[in-house]
Length: 142
Length: 387
Image (tube, rainbow over the protein chains, first blue to last red):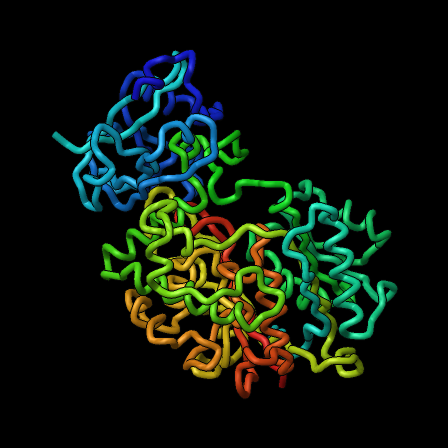
């Protein structure tokens, strides 16, 4: 995607990063993907948050993910009026199920939309879209 | 404490407009309130409770609405859980009236979303949502349609549900709209027409999606006792339920939706069973919304929705009539349409629906969905009876 290599012209929406979530985004800049695990009840969670929603404990462990997973579901988006996206249609939006068992929203890239199917094995790709923001996307596993 | 049959929806009004560049949303609401009060024979002086939510309203818009109407109510509820809001508002009004917080509650919605060209289903991913979850989603371009499309894709994968089966829902809604003079789209369509329409977000075609219109409506709710002296036959509140489903910390089963819980609560509280329901108003933002809602409410088993919606079962004269007004797919969808679910259900219970009237309609169910099945959503179920 040529326009994404040109950082100054990145037109898609950027995340409004909460301070609470900053460690996760900083890890993404290091090209590392994390989920969280509650040290008290053991429950896993994504997106990251300060408290375990199952027991409200603040005692949190960051667990680094392999970046491998499979497509849980997806859609080939042919229409989106939002700046940036309207110039990169069609694109694939997906919920990816990580090997660690949690689902996260992302894009499936580096393949034709017609190749995408549910259960397709995928691997994380870290896209440095601006000097401050790296997005975690996925591509078909090698 | 049971709320069953202690309150009733006594007045309803659906604003006839589908495109109103000359009106404000509060004007549409106020005209709708006037209509609903006329419908039951009450006046604005009788109103001491107000409930509303809107897409264009500010976070404290309920106060602005009081200002517009010069109301100083004893009860206010600005609960905004998306399109399901107004179904939930009926339960909230019933509880408030039963608790003595107010006597006559008005619920209203109005929107000029079409004339102001707001890209509600095909925007998305723009700007900054205020919720922490948005930063992990908006950069990837989730549209409203895309979120529902991902549920459809998963349903097809798990159960072999087909685009033809989803299309049957759109075809039936259009048949009903053809019998509703106020509906926006009234020309009959076929399954082939739906499949031939462009794919907006796979696997959903254009005709799997609701329209964007302007519009609004209002409901009047009061005690069963006061309802007896009013102009029209009351639609008694038998039971209701509401809840939310979301990403569930990354552990969501996306085919289990809010209706599963809100429906169970509504049936338990109403003391009726599925076979007692004569017709249903099921929020039809998309064809897949209807299919998964019917499964989750328990009208068919999970995975059997495709077969259930086929063969004309959902027609006004079929085994299980739904959305006799034509729904959001063909009648109107001004951003949120929960209020129209209740309006049409009440008209059916009164026998006011003319050619699209369901025979012997005594108990009706409404289910509203707000937000997006494929990210976060609310569900509100309401069961009404004319007895």
